[in-house]
Length: 365
Image (cartoon, rainbow, N blue to C red):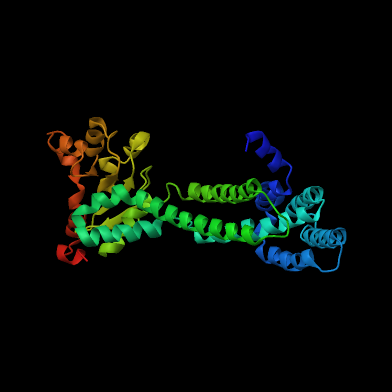
């Protein structure tokens, strides 16, 4: 079939509006997303669907009854003068202009039942954050390999969470796609071509991916800071609030007190980037006034960790915990001017336990 023929079938078909009905029902900015009002949408379906097949009525009569029922129901949720009410009125006016046959109504109801409501449920099943997956996989790494493999947990933290959430997305889209295909096979009221069915199936996939992509954006970059909390919880370490009156541009994820009463702050970031000069505002004198022994930086991407950053911040009692096998750690740990400021991640858990006066054996679950 030629591309021109396919286009003429799609744009000459009522089923082309599957995609547009789905977008309109879920468009928050323009129409206040009426499709997310699931109780009302299910009620609308239960009231309108049975009317599509009333026996002994001409198609034009069924069309009039179904159209009146559908539009009356939609206008009920548009009453009032609030911003959302006015948006829903616009929605009703545009739907009104797009429906001119019983097949148009069938397309609208089918879209609501097999695309909009199922994707609503899928979005609920997809996690809002990936911390659950991160903690699960990280725990397995540490339980199997031991505390000296903290670097693997840090380097894989984001990857583990992303992969876990994407696996859920795949399960949801496959399940929904399968149910939609089955529904199309049983829908005999209005015969369709293969091209029309493909337009419906791709409308579902496109809308699913759009909504899943929005959730991915919200999840991105939110989980890495949680890794230190996970480690403290996993090994039972005690954390402590930030020292009173201490103010700095340093973004510290966790504080703990040593057995001598001094504090240490831990920051976990992918890279220092340009913030290292702000970090340097917490100089040695400031740390001493607040009984802060050191600030520890857990860096997962250390290629931009220059000699200047290490030596300048190291002199101000900032310590960098790096992967044992990274080129940056090997070079710095063998350099007279930097070796005191870098430490291997394999010793992180042991060192925290030692600073808190905990037996190292008790921190290996």
